[in-house]
Image 1 (cartoon, rainbow, N blue to C red):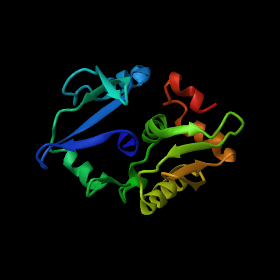
Image 2 (tube, one colour):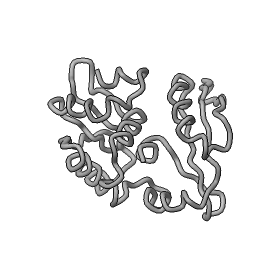
Image 3 (cartoon, rainbow, N blue to C red):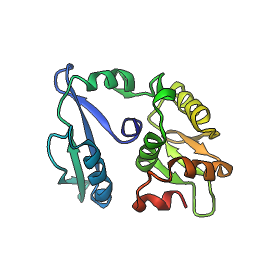
Length: 183
């Protein structure tokens, strides 16, 4: 769930079977290896490095895919609407502390070094999805949030007064190399 809310992407070749694509910068190798360890029974191959040139600059990516499976079709129907990522109506039932931690490791950050507030980058979600996500955070974990307007869309803003509660919910799942995101 956390990968689908975050940087994970489902793709299909035929509309019947789907696979989960996981790709991060090479600097997040430890994270990708951890994800691979959790998903290796579904993986098509071990993680690999690929180089990508963008405007003359070369970026190193570290990635793997799961095998194609009809089982992922259910999730594609829940997390995508005409190719756009959405939050499923059932997200309240599916958002666990582990899923929240993975989502935060993918798309979360501290507001700044001077603030305790946290941000989850949710610019690709529509307002209905954002409302579902905020409601799930409140209902499941008692975490109050607001939406913060950005040029590209909206972020979920977790108030500084909620930072300790948030850290208690996800802290045991956050990998050590992401601890800077929690303070």
